[in-house]
Length: 66
Image 1 (spheres, rainbow, N blue to C red):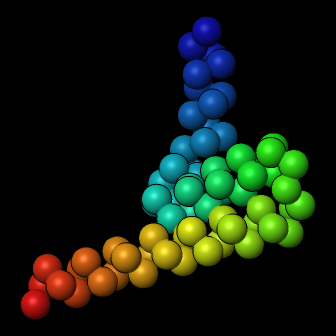
Image 2 (image 1 turned 90 degrees about the vertical axis):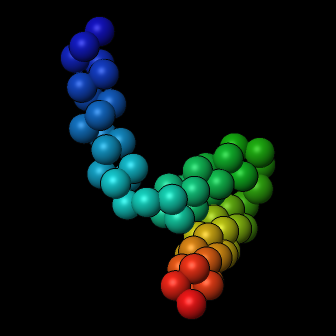
């Protein structure tokens, strides 16, 4: 069982280390593709979510430092 957990950690750790925006982009793209959307629409929605999260993070950072 520990070897399975170690394998999952080696696979998913780099993705988790990227941060919230890339992780949510991938998760949303996979979920929408599972629910019978086209791959292009899935990737488009995931990218839009990633851009939105990055923008919100930047705006919150600007507001809190001002």
